[in-house]
Length: 329
Image (cartoon, rainbow, N blue to C red):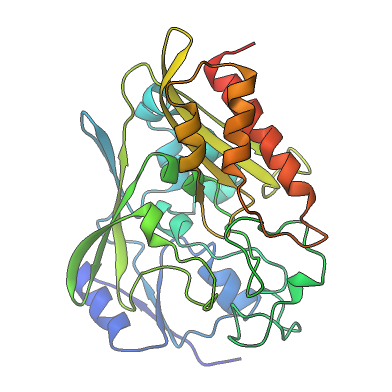
């Protein structure tokens, strides 16, 4: 077992300085990912863990057009906020579907955004071929059991799926991340935060070493918008998605005037479907429209024998959530 130093940060600047000074240092918030990877699975080997759990990065502020969510706000705290039920119920649905109550009371929103893949090969040290863990070693999932893996954004380098439910809904809403690091502050749209695995599966996002998420801004859709989150999984208790879909739309009569659609369980990153949105906007809310949107959403998938079934399952999931949200018969 590697030596490990634990430190508790007094403030944001001190936390950033401590992690920036050591390439092996990491931030610790709720710990539901870091502790698993470092202490349980021994997939990562940090030298210093900097506890930021008591920093003033917790809380939710509701403005007219957005929610401003501190990165240390827990999943349960966000799920309980009345604005979610009133304006964006699919964010609440994604939160509740994403973890057990015990985990939601510990896991932070910032940590959820940064969670790592649940790929069995990435998390098993006995498997050598994992480009995400050991660049250049190959991808064991290509020829192994791959039922839970990605078909969108995937390729011969990596087919590991992004596991977050919440981030599917957040990508659909164009959420923004506020970051702070040794070089100052910046804002990054969530859709630009994640890096597809082609060439460098070990690089998962644009976060720099020593940089932390301090806040997530969630834009609110117009009043009257409808939304929903559908998660298809092997069991209804705590389980990761085979396919999930987050949809939001506004309608004038039977015509769709605005649409947002994102997919989970099938993408190497939370997968926004702009081509499907273009099919929906201006079209009638009927099954033929939804089927056309589903075809557009699942464009040029990369499959292996264990994941080919997800193409049709994802299309049916898209049609079902669009019918549900629109109220179409």
